[in-house]
Length: 326
Image 1: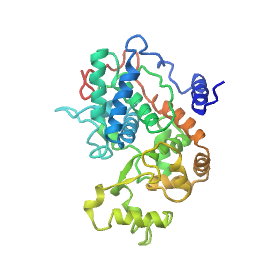
Image 2: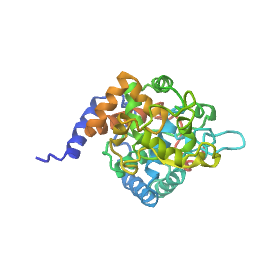
Image 3: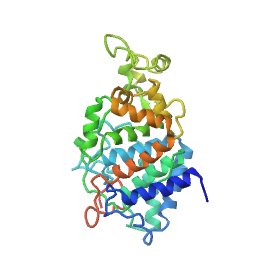
Image 4: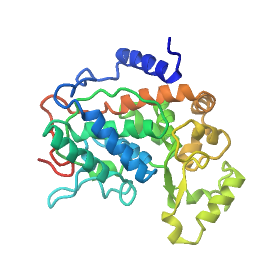
């Protein structure tokens, strides 16, 4: 019998999903099996190609999916361009000059329109691309229920209310619970910061005059010195410089992010804050020790997140171009 841990994960996790109340009954793992059988291959090849060209793209596609689902549900509204009458979400503060990966989704959608026209939603493309980005970056694979449809509106104001690295943990948790998620999902999905980079302005306040004119005391002294060098206090030009969220294995999806938090080496204040609460700190410690536990729970939380406010049946539409409503 095959005892490969990844194989055991697939069997165990798929079994859990069948029992999970968070998988919408209107979504189906085989939704496109007959209408677009090459969908998985088309998405995975494009994601693989994008990551091969730019390793940061794995984190970017994951973040793009998160920023979509947290604004009026997983309806691909984040992909819509501004029009003469409607403001999209791309220029909202959390997204402008920050969110990336739109061109990758465009490429996937163009290829899908050739293979199976007007069949696969942009919302499902985003969901699959995020899953494949994690897998190709070294994480585990999980099955994704499909059948989402695309929204016809966007909300810049809602996008401006996305969870922020500048907010206290209780505010971030409240935003998660408002979407049907919980504090465990906060800890688990924060683990996405095991890959990717952050701009200096998102953590610069911790480096110099955080409290009483001194740097954040919860930040490791060695990391502090490195970050102060990368992001000088009086150099506004450094605000857009990048620093890895996980400096140990920045390109690999693993559980080192949690070990960093245990060692006071979380880059963002909102990440390190997970160690300041007994309940979340306990989960962080567990994930830091047991990578399999993190991979399993991350997959489950991603399926939950990807079910937020989905449009199914006759709601919404199947966009032909992800940037514009039909």
